[in-house]
Length: 428
Image (cartoon, rainbow, N blue to C red):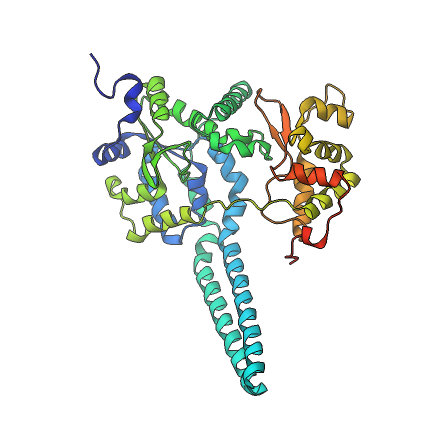
C-alpha cells in the first residue's frame, strides 16, 4: 500500500518550516550565479551578511561550474550597476527640472511676472534638483569602499576554494545542451522560460539553467544528500507558484531529484536564506532580507519595444554594406514566409558550402543593432532582430524575427519608404 505522497506524487509535498530548517542544517546548498552577482547590487551590509551566511555552510556549500561561468560573463555589468543606476536617476531628474522651468516661463508670460522674479524661481528649481543629484551621489560614495575596490571578489575567491564543481566533458556538455533544448520545446522544467536566450553569445544558449540543475543534482547525489538550490530566479520553470505565493520547487523537479538520488530537493531565495540565517548560528541585520527581496523587484523585465520601419530600414542599409548574406536572409523573413528562414534557405541565399557552420551568423545583427541604438536610430528596448531556433538539437534548424518585423519587411519590399514618424523621437 502507498501513502498520499508516494511515487509520482512526492513532488506535491510542501516543505514545512521545520523541514526547511533541518535541510539548511544538513543538506548540500548550491548557489546560482544570480546570487553571486547580486552581491554587487545589494547594499554593503546585505552583501556582507550573505557572505557570512554562505561561509557558515562550510563544505556543504557548492557552486555549479556553469554558475561560475555565468558569474564571470556578467560580473562587470553587475559591478557597474550601482553607478549606472545612480547616473540614470540623476539624469532623469533633469527632465522634470526642464519641464518645471518651461512651465514657469509660460506662467510668467500669462500673469505678468517680472523677469527678475522669474529668474529667482528658476534658480530655486535648479538648486533643488542639483541638491537631489548630489544626495544620490553621496549614497553611491558610501558603497564605493565596499563595491568600488571589489572586496567582494576577494571574499568570493576565498569562500569558493574547492567549492566549484568540475567542468563537464565535451560530450557530457553537448548531451546536456541537447536535453535542455528538448525541455524548452516540451516546456519541461527547468529552463524552458529561457528559450529566447538561444541566440545569445554564450555557447550554451538557453541551456544555462539546465546545466546548473544537472551539475548541482549530480554533485548532491554523489554525496547522498538532500539539495537546496539558492536562486534569485522566480520564473515558473523553477517554482510552484500560486499568483504571488511561492509554494516550493516545481513538483517535477522534486520528483526528478528523488528518482535520481532518493533524496529531497528544496528551492530557496536569497531573502529567505537570510531570514533563516539564525539556523546556521549567523547574526544578520534585520533589513538585509528586505533588501535582498527588493533587488528581485527591480529586476522585473519590461516588454520589448517594437521595431519601427525606420529602424529596420537603417539596419538593412548597414547590412547591405557590411553583411550582404545576413541582409538577404532578413529580407526573406516576410509575412509570406511566416517571419522564418529555414537553415537550408540560409545556405541558398548566402551561397554557402554544405560544410560551413552557421554559428555566428546572427552576430552582425546584434552588432549593427547596438551601433544604431547608440546613434538613437533603433529603439533601445527592441527584441533581437534575427534569432536562431534549435528544435532538432545542437544545429540551428531555422531563424526567426520579432512578430512585428514580417509586416515591416513586406512594406519595405513593396517600396514604402520610412517617414520621420517611422523613426524613434529620442535621439539622445
